[in-house]
Length: 363
Image (cartoon, rainbow, N blue to C red; front, side):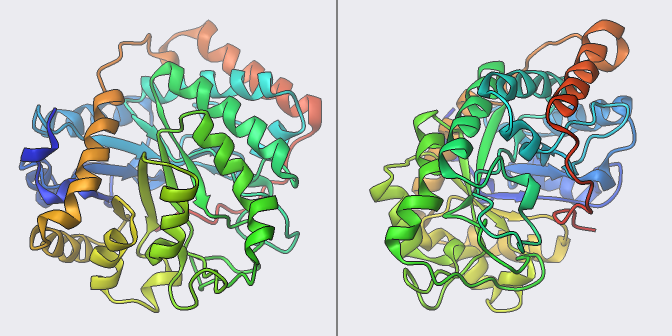
């Protein structure tokens, strides 16, 4: 698998509306002009439909540029797969238990994702829940202290990736102390570098040590690092990840349709500007017109802006997304029932996390 012959659009992961792949997106996938698809609740009705959808998506892609299919399946309020799939507890519930319990959760979840034909889980959240007024993180975080978050993140990453499903640590360099939701506004954190070193960065270091397959950026402004650009668009912030944390794996932007960046930055900034900062892959999760505008910009971009991202994406796809044959969990009793029992035990041991609205679901 060589990135040298790949289309620039491989650096674009997209979403779509409905239960079937739209014709225009089908054509772009066939041509290798899209690198991945992100699925949401709007794309899923039942296990049979989802398996057929992911099979179609994988079969559409060229053999030498396979498609990655991703989903947000954290547990708690952020999980796209619900009944009849397992209703998993929030990460906060896991953070109150042993890392071995988190690993058991991740292994079981990985089997459900493989069964559904999925390659990448945009999890775990490794933000530290340091602000009780945070409207978007809260119980999506394992804990309020960095060490606990790091231990459970490493357990989750190792267990899920051993099953063959890629993980993604989010949201770099940290979204836990914000009091605004970046889906709706641009959060600003006036944090000194030593505070980042104490609180926000240790869980990312633990994730990197666990060989996490990918990292997602935060649409958060850190003026002490870059007074003008949020982390997703900031060479200073991404440079910290690449040079100081020595991470050479795949980096995703968060969705560039989110108001934190869409209300303040042009499409040029949210596409080529993101790559210039050091991010590899751009997420555009709903809008077909934005997808096509970003794609056009990528296809006119100079090779030197694309080469590092394509190299990292090729390595990622070489490791993850290969066909894995598993017994359909939703068609047999004992394996799937054991997942439900595990989820119930985890809740019983600590107590159910508060059920809140999912802040990450884009209509």
